[in-house]
Image (spheres, each protein chain N blue to C red):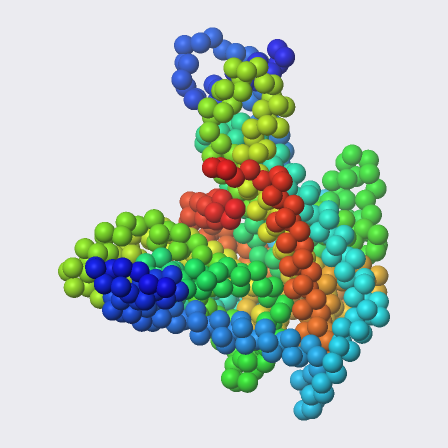
Length: 319
Length: 303
């Protein structure tokens, strides 16, 4: 490939005409990029290959020898009851957390948008505050709120005549309790939706009103398409985050607690928690690496499905 | 239909508050707004009451944590010194502060450097290389977690604070992506003028690009303050000695063993929760504008 620059034919490299000026800029770009390039090699690309290799071994940091065992780790996962349990728990959580948090956030953002002005700013701040609470503190807080029959949640339920369950002990109620906890930090999504709603041009609503469209029609045919980009973005981001849920649940249910109930160990065993325990509590790092690569593949497949599916629902301006 | 029309009239009036001052009071509109206000207030209480409750739990006598009263019968401010006597909380707070500041400063500077290169310099395969940045954002931390542990262990930094922040010396894809957008928004002529003045590229970056993107850099800095301060995973992996713990790791240790003399002390858990949360609330109120704008802009650029 060649391009003409200042009357001379110049070879084109990687989409850029290769002039002395480009060479100088490329050298400087390398200088500016060097932190990222070094980090990519040492802390991302290298470790990816390494963990892929480890997933085919029985590596245990406490033993000096590494044996290559082929696909044994992956085969072992199929027969590991706890992998099935943790996958089920993680899927259960994701299936409830993602739609619920999106629906609640959209509801709150729509009201904020209707109210507008200073008042919206105040409530937006209030809704966001739980999000600055560190995960360990969220775990601690809900350890107390969901506690036995005396926790705040059950006290609140008692007010409306409901006898609340043992959220932290009863295996049936552990995951609903975790979902409840996750909805407390919905404020992040509210802010994203609120920003998207404010970007919808008001002329669209005015035109719709002249055409006699009612509130539901306006919501269905203007609001939803115009914020579909934000909805899709949060769908993908929240799904990826849900599949990797760790800190809050680990804080409440795992670690070196004495007298931790066996039921909780099963019902609250999320996939990344099981991975973490294998790597750093049981030191089965080969097996944990295999778990990590399966997680990676699962996330990629789900994201691709969501991106494919979104093409039908997401409206992009300018199309 | 009639309600629909009333609603749209409301919406228009809300869009321009104070526009029609002379009109008589529309009681339907007032009722509508009061209704919204009540719903918002209900959710505000739902979101804020737990934090308020946690604070009061932290100054209650142990036996009253689950009493059902919000206020303590006796104010036990000594719960705070009690926890500090029992655990090296001040040491943890110092460790957390050190890690958080180093992590935020380094990642802001290096990400700005890398982002500028993607925005300004023309070099071969720039699009492809930037694609690698985007792709690496998708990689779950679990995949590189084990080799990263082995690397820091090999370098002799296991059981130190170094692995908690030093990775940030190498920039972060998410922040590179975000800052590149802002650098792209600067007119190129600004830099060409600086080059005529003989500024080299590093000077140009530091004295032209960086000052002009100050707000975006503050967003990155504040985001990372929160990420580094709240991180639990890396402290769990790397820190063994109690003296090296950060506040989240320390609080986790207290949860794992909340007993003094065989009795569980839930009020001390509340103290830990408050100690770790209050600094974040202060940071949030100081940088609120940047926080909210950051989330709003990164949310909308994500599509």
